[in-house]
Image (cartoon, rainbow, N blue to C red):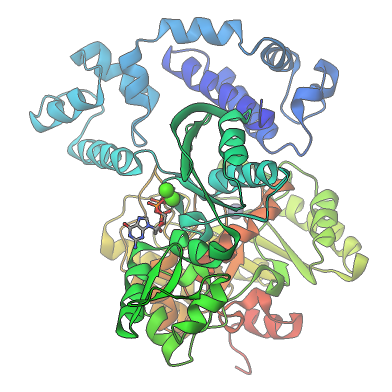
Length: 574
Ligand code: DGT
Ligand code: CA
Ligand code: CA
Ligand code: ZN
């Protein structure tokens, strides 16, 4: 098993869904769901634990621990196999639609005998769902939208899944004798929020050993094409990988070519042509004589075109060529610029690790400051109370300053349908900062949704709008809202917009960031960590921010603490 924790998480989550569909105990389904998340977020390798060791993980009891051991030992779990066998394949296909829950899927199957996504789409168009209990016109729209999302997502994977797979492959190929260079290119290097396939490059004299090695990696499930220039495989997780081996002296040109984007490359090739040159994956050549004029490094290739090196996240032909020609490329924010995380959770609400452990892990990252922002009471299932959050504040103050990291006590408020938030003003004034997010009422109409978010910005205690659109990549669309109005309100009121680094959110996304920035809004790049490993998601947030052209000046959590505190007061001098 390449990543045992993730495999076990997926299996337990599937089991929870299966229990729900077969009309099983809702409590039991929830227990499996919680255990799935706990195991996914567990920092150690669960395949090395016995039943006793597994039970030390929060939310993992004896029977779940035994199933995990069974899975690690045999690769399957009898109980899960039995549940799978009880559910028709068609229903399983329906559940994969992001906006359709297990219960509705079962109703459609039993009442209308719908057993495929295409049949469902046809049935909606033929208005056959009308009259089914629990299916209004709005539900139909949601389902159709879910089908769209599923088809668009078609085969694309999350940035984090791609990055983890690429790291393993690059590490494996780098160990092979004769490897001069090895790196990933393509949309992953540009840090797009979803990735079609992985593009891996090697510089070496002899391609054969690398091509061979890729087909033989333990993670390789299927060889799609095997050649001297390019080999393509599919991994056990369904990720397609293209490997190209080039000669050392074309490394820079190949890296530039295969990083893309296509649109960016069209521009660079046009510039070459205007200078009487020809740009390909092998190098930059004199058009007539064919003499090679640049190819060893990307810097050299760009320089010969009269351009500075352009950060990969900017290479989308969204103005970066013109900015580069004018010498006005932004100095985009990097991971090293981030001084602290401003949206994180502990096990006081739905996080997995206790406060001290989260704080210690943050300190190991070298942060100057760190905010703890557990959920506020209106998210009822989190059972937050005044007493609990105040006790946490005391505990946090006692840890403040250890390893010279300053702690901020915050909370993640819930923006209600009218823009109201949890707790009265006097209580909110006791926090160092408040994140406020939409966690409910996703279906308000555009006007009401816009007013709701603008009101939240106008609240003097709200400092950051968390995951502003609430989209889940490939699963849930963002809310319907006039973002320009919200961005303008953020700029006007001194409220930052979050770039949430959770790989299935990346919210705001790159294009929204570009728009928000043009309104003069500020940003906070946060992990929304619910466990220690989540703190490392920061890099995906930073990549997304780079794609939105953000500089450290735009991002409040790159600022020194004094300046950040001024921003958190919202009305400096006022
Ligand atoms: P993806 O895989 O869909 O997430 O997106 P990319 O950008 O990784 O696209 P991919 O894998 O098809 O190709 C990798 C890079 O190779 C692409 O960004 C630019 C370059 N490339 C591929 N095909 C062409 C082409 O026909 N013309 C040009 N100029 N560049 C190409
Ligand atoms: Ca690609
Ligand atoms: Ca490719
Ligand atoms: Zn959160």
